[in-house]
Amino acid sequence: MARRTLWLVLVAGCGSTAPALPDAAAIDAAADVMDAPPDAPPLDLAADALLPEGDAVARLFLTVNELPDYLSGARPYRQSDGVPHAFRVRVNRANFTLDLTTAGADRSTLKVTCDQPFTLPGGTVAPGAPLPASAFAPAGADKVRLRITEAALPDGATVRCQASASGVAASALTFVAATLPPSLDPFPRPDVWLVILSRDLFRLEVATLPDGTRRLTSTHLPAGNGEIDLDEPLYELGLFSRKAPEATRVVKARLLAEVRRKAHRIFGLHDDGAPGPDSVPVRLWFEGDPGAPRAADYAGGDFSMIALGGDGTPEDQAMNLVGRADVDWNNRVRNDDSGYGLGVYPTGIVRQALANPLSLVLLGSILPGRGTPLGEGPDDARMLADGFDPDTADPALQARHDVYSLVMRLLSTALASTLCHEIGHSLGLVPSGPPPLGMFAELPGLDFTVKESVGPHIDTPGLNVEQSGASTNWMDALTEEPRFNELSLGYLRRRLVVGAP
Image (tube, rainbow, N blue to C red; front, side):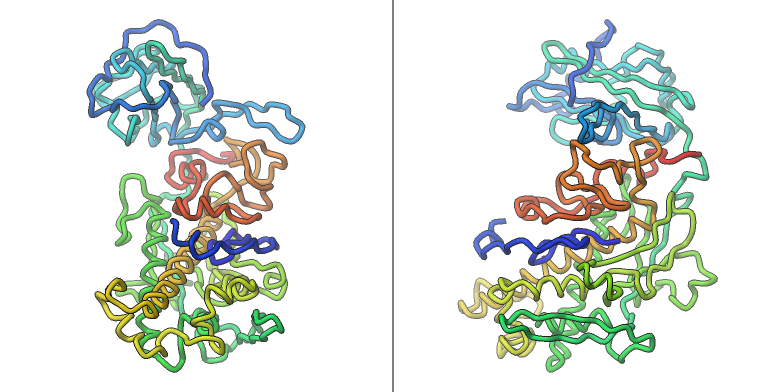
């Protein structure tokens, strides 16, 4: 499905129009209050390392799975009629986090209680008794976290937990605790994905318009045209050059390395793809990696596939879509998102960039027929060499390196976030309706979304990769990394139970 893509025009995939490009200087710039809990012995969280002092206004915020109040059920959601609708998230009682944020509170009087028996490694805490301070670990400035890895609450229980401290308003949250059943478990084992890089299903046609912009059109050729679909639009961008194959090889390797690194980061993996305690249980292989599964073995294999390269159908092209994938609720089957009409569309991304007149200003120095594509400049071999220091170069080469760095940064981010977005659909994102059956997709007029959701998307604030529609806020783009929103992450981390058993 289409997604908002972070590129020179930072536009939506679902038929949106491109906003104005930022100027070069801009590019370079880079909890509701609940009832007070009943009396209980204070929770001792006085250690400085646990909750450091700060200058913020004193407050408490208690939640599960790092959810903000508008996604946790701490406050009702409203649609355009303004009517409040209460909801509860349903946590995996054997795998979730209880998160407490405090700023400026008296830490010697902090206490956290729940109204259900809470089983921890050291024993069961009775309803209403404070959870032990030793169960909470530091989780950043003014934050502590209780991480649950075994069944901690009664199955099916509605649980109300509360945090309080002297002199500040209490914070509380009600949620449902449940066993994650096999029918709703998106990851009974880690999901393996092969990213196809060699797809050849299109012939790219380019027309230069009177204003200098370019119109890119892809024609479907089932037998291909002998040129990799991923490469063709990047020649038109000037990032690759047919006259400089060695430079193109270097640039492509660096681009894919960045796409891989950023995709790993979005999924919470280490840069090398290794999982961490908060990662999504996926394993990404790029075609050609040593040990990667082979596309030819898909029929009898245990992995899914997605293509990175090419374009959409004529209808997709007309709507400026940049990707599609099969939606697989709760990730029930292996998926093949590598065929015609599916995958990540680099041509769709470049199409939108080259259709914007301001891209001629930013990219003119490398555009074919207007400038000198990368690899063809007299000093490009030096510029692309390992260890090149632009500060030691003359102003002209510095400027060329700035353009190269800008394109690599934004294109790798666009490709990585689109890749994760489309894989996200095939992992089960985003179901319609409120929790616990859905994750807020297709609810018109929501009071906390940036844009109306269309299909299996949700456009919450920030650079949420499962959003669609509208233009991206450049302040977000300059200061944030693309990410799944907290509700999507809770599902992907197996910390929420989503759907009807």
